[in-house]
Image (tube, rainbow, N blue to C red; front, top):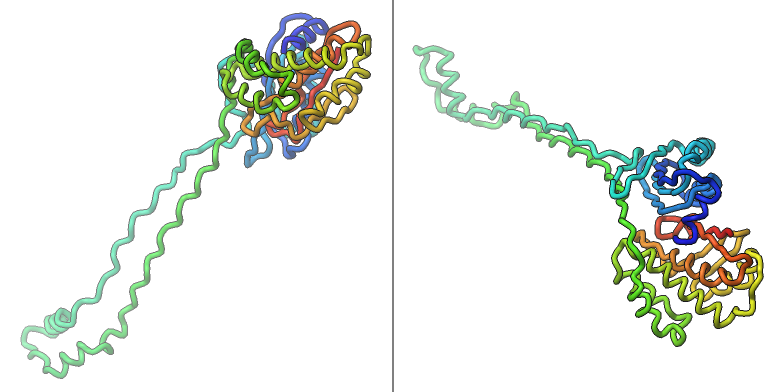
Length: 336
């Protein structure tokens, strides 16, 4: 986001880098918020995040941007986080996909089914049994009488034969554990200005019932331009709303502007709770469960709405977490 990209550099200075945090935790609730706060306290801004359920636990992947000189401070903060079972901190390279270090790996099964057992011997026929008895008695022995043959063919003559036991099939191999999909980075693109102007052409007539137009806007633009386009749309809506309803509310400090202007304006779209300088947005209609975040619109709207109201101007928004990535709610941190 345009307003927040300059903030880390002004406070930390030095070379700006993007780092990828991969962490394993046992509990999901509040994990994104806590790790996001740790990163923010070290001067890093959130680029994107993701939560995945795994047999080992909860897999967190978070990309943050900040000064290279603050990397050690971030590592120290993560080491002190009791929620994390383990973590890895490394450089993030645009376009590269790195599997999570704690994800369950798909191991090829070495199971080889045993060879089929040889068929059990079948009792010889009655005539063959009689012939064998004659051969053992000797060539000079006379053939047995018919009564003997009949007796040999009776069921009582086979009492010593063991019954054939049915063969038990081998157990089926255990299915391999599912492998979590790797985190895939989408190249960021500039906002689609023409699409924003078309979506907001009837803003004065449609407001505040513009959520369907915003959802359609997010689906029509390229994936890499979705966040920047929604942010631009939010800036346009915020500036328009300030000029219409809050033009006389200038010279406010940030806390007063958030309470008097920001929260009432965002209430038109979702349930909002102000906690300090953090806005907790519940049940956001723009943040779907497939990882498509709409928090860029809310960040842009706050910039366009509160920027002219606070003195001196200058507003930075930091997306702590988003419900589209598995969090319980969307949280935006706001600072001057």
